Length: 102
Ligand code: TYC
Image (tube, rainbow, N blue to C red; front, top):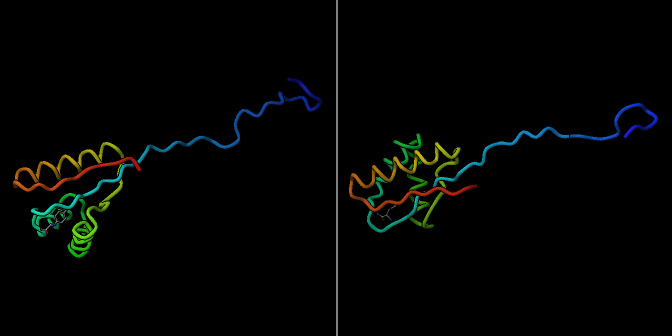
């Protein structure tokens, strides 16, 4: 389309599309059998959380039923879930760790 000002009067794009990858919440679920200290160890070992923060998050899960322990790109979230589930199974605890798209 040609008009007076000489350019092609079509706006192709205004804002550049910088699409970020979706992020995934990794959650720990409560149960009646996994020892509290084991959950604290899991949080320290696999999520790099400090001992004090790990106790807080563990108690949140214990009281509320679940808590988000971190938000990661898909592949990293998947690795965390696998590591926690394998570690719990090796120690014969029923601890459950899941991920969910944010
Ligand atoms: N409810 C467990 C207990 O009383 C402790 C616990 C906390 C288990 C967090 C799982 O994700 C969990 N021993």
